[in-house]
Image (cartoon, rainbow, N blue to C red; front, side, top):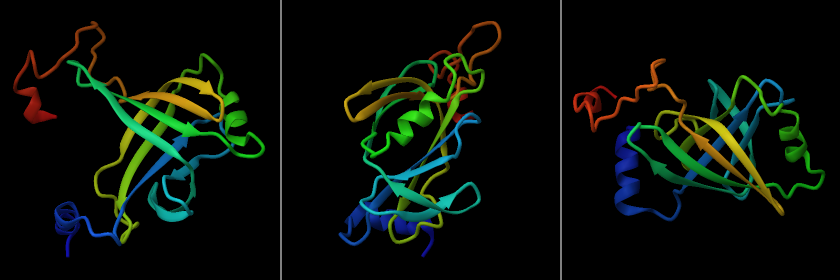
Length: 167
């Protein structure tokens, strides 16, 4: 059965043995390693960056906060930081405040019966802001600002209807 047919069956019937698994990849040149996380209760080996990689279990919640007329998508991700040594928080402190290259957050979705093929193309986002609370971090992440020109003009389907079919 093709992935499209599997996804259609899963959405139509929601079998109890097959679940949706979301993985997050956090990468930056100043981090000591690229972090691979999943919203599962146990580690999984899933497809990432052209090969199968181990993803550590982490509690996180991703919400699509808003989508404005500029086609940019803004997400809010609440990330659990309750590791014993504060390893992840110390890693985030390594990134300079005015770093020219943004932290890349890549989202992937899988069905639990096939972790070798994502359900959709990778969603690559830029980390814009981090807010810490006790035991958690709230990330403001958004799609890369690709649709703005050097003149400051923003293009959206509201103003140019044919751009909707292009994107």
